[in-house]
Image (cartoon, rainbow over all chains, first blue to last red; front, side, top):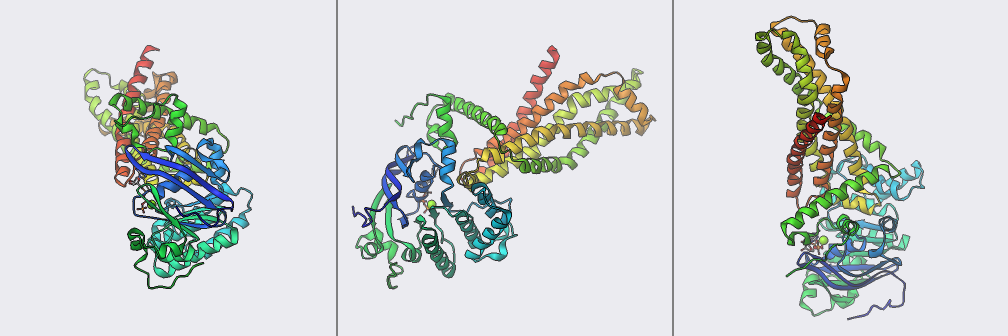
Length: 260
Length: 278
Ligand SMILES: Nc1ncnc2c1ncn2[C@@H]1O[C@H](COP(=O)(O)OP(=O)(O)OP(=O)(O)O)[C@@H](O)[C@H]1O
Ligand SMILES: [Mg+2]
C-alpha cells in the first residue's frame, strides 16, 4: 500500500480495521484510514461499496461491528451519548440526500445547528452568519423558502450551507456536487477548498465527480468490496493503469491536471 | 449459521439499538426473540421519552406548536362526530324510553353513555386515525430522508426535540378533544330530543347531570389521558423506527393507525375492568 507523504503530520481521524455488517451483508470488511489535519481526502468507490456507511460510522450514526475509530483523540465507540454529542459539534456532516428539515424554512434550517451548537451567538450574529453562508452557496434569495419549493440542486447547496455554518473542524461531505450543473459543481468544489484554507478544516469528500476530485483532492483512497483498494495522490490515480481506477478517470482525461 | 452476539443487559441492548435502528441482525432470530426484542424496544423507547421529558432544555416551542396542530387538525371532524353521536343516541333510544314511560331519563342516559364511553372511545379512534397516522408519516419520512440523523449530528436529541413534544401534546390535547366531543354530543342529544318533543336546554342539562356525580366521570377522564398517550406513543414509535426506503413511510403511517386503534380498545377494556372493581 502506498503510504502518504504526510506520514508525520497530525491525524484528526484514525480508523483501524473497521468492520461493519448489516446482518449477513459485510459492507466494510477491514478499513484502515487516516485523515490528516488540514487535508482534503477524497473517497472513491462504486455505488454500494459503503462510502456513506464509512462516514456514518465516524460520527456514530451507525455502530461498527469491530475496529477502532479515533476522532480528534477520542475513541468514538467507547464514548457516552453526551460525549458523542460534544464531539459531533466539531464535525460537519453533509448528507447524500441533503436531509433538509421539510417543516422548516431555509432560514430555520440554517439556524437549527447554529442555535444548538453555538449557543454563545447573539441574534444579530446568527442572522449575519445565515446570510453569509447563503451568499457562499450562491442562494441569498432562498432564505424564506421551504425545502419543497427548491430544486434538487438548490437543496443540495442549502444543506451544504447548513453544514458549514458552524465552522466545524472536520467536514464529511457525502457527494457534495452530485446532481449539480458543471458551473455550480465547480463553485462548490472551490468553496470546499476555500473552507479548507480559511478554517483549516480537514475533510473527507465522497464523490464520483472527477472534476471535483481534481479540484479538491490532496489525497485519494478508493474503496472496493469493503477494503481499501488503492491510496495515493491525484497523479497516481490519473496515471494508473488499473482498469477500475481508469474507468473512473477516463471520461475527462483530455483535461490537463490541475493539481492543487 | 449467522450467530448474533448475545445481548446481556437491557442497557447494552439500548445502546446498540438507539444508534443502529436499521440493523437487520434481529431478523435472523426466531419469532419469540423478535417479540421480546420488540417489547424491549418499546420499553426502552418509553423510558427514553420519560427521561427526556424531565431533562433540562424542554422544547417548549415545539410542544406548543404540536398542541396547536393536534387540536386543530381534528377539530372539524370531531365536532361533526360529537353532534352526530348525541343525535343518533337520542333518536334511537327515545321511542323505547317512551314505551316504558321513562322519557325524562333520556338526557341522563345519554350523558352517561356519552361521557363514560362513546365520547372517549370514538374520539380516540378518530384521533388514532387522524393524528396517529400523521405523526407516523411525518416521523417516518424524517427517518427515511435522514432528517432524524441530521438532528443527531447537530447534537440534538431527536427524542427530545421530536418525540417528547408530540407525545405530551397528544396526551394533553386528546382529553380536551374528548371533552369537547362530549359537550357537542350533549348538544346534539338536545337537538335530537327537540325534533319530536320539546324540552328546554336548561331542563335538559339539569336532567342530564342531575343523577350523576362528578366522581362518576373521573375514570373516563383518566382513561382519556391514556388514550392520548397511547396515540402519540404509537405514532412516534412507528415513525421513529421506520425502515429504509419510501415505502416505509406508508407502512409507518398505516401501522400507527392499526396499532393505536387496537391499543385504544385494549386500554378501554382494561379501564372498564378497573372501574368495575372500584
Ligand atoms: N442502515 C442500513 N441498513 C442496512 N443496510 C444498509 C444500511 N445502510 C447501508 N446499507 C447497505 O450498505 C451498502 C453500502 O451502502 P452505502 O450507502 O454506504 O453505499 P455508498 O458507497 O454510499 O453508495 P452510493 O455511491 O450509491 O451512495 C449497501 O448495500 C446498502 O444497502
Ligand atoms: Mg452514499
